Image 1 (cartoon, rainbow, N blue to C red):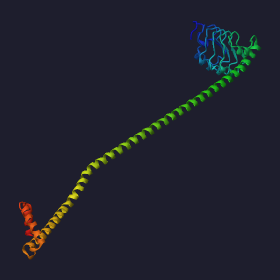
Image 2: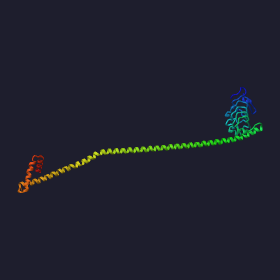
Image 3: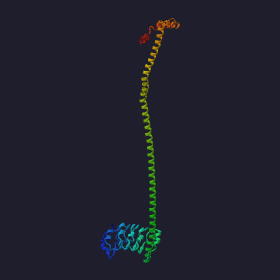
Image 4: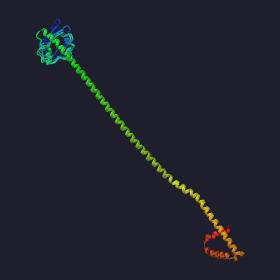
Length: 308
């Protein structure tokens, strides 16, 4: 609080009945706490000071019935000014007020109002009219209250419209956000599905390659054994075949030799030697014996045959 020394002094000393006169105190701030402690001071005169604004807690002084703020430098009234529900008389002469707060419409007890010599906006100035006598000031209070009710209703409608617009905008943003998130989720699902399909293809390809490698490896491992089996089986079978063939050949040779030997014996040592056939046989025998005499193998065979 700023005031000239000794002018404000002790507030209780300035109370006269229900009136508290703080005019001409060179005040730029209002001692709200001290005023709240004097509820019986329902008439408050703050005129002719240097007030440029009222503090917000000034609106808690609901016991005030008559308030004089004339000839100050007030630019505006607090937003919650309508809380002064018991206010009946308000003097705002010669200030710098252009607008009144919307809550001004809540001053249902207001009966007298003076807004002269303020730079009011045209609509408010038209509603206020003149306040040159008691009747006009009372009419001013009524008209301004009606005007402020309209203003308050319009402001409430604007506020409601803004709230609806903000709500609609919020819902739109939320919907867009949900759509964006859904789109991102769908994109992630597609990417995961593609990754899974790609991994599946890679896995199948790897399995196929491994199976092919195992098959080739198995073929390589089984090929020699098969060849061995194929070659070994005939070898096992061929041995008897070779031996049997050899035996058959030997047997045939032996039979032939025995037949030849029998023929030779018959032609050389029997009466058949005089026959022409035996003469040929004896000749062939003699030549054959001379030709193969040096062949030791045949001699061995012949010896074997002779032994048998």
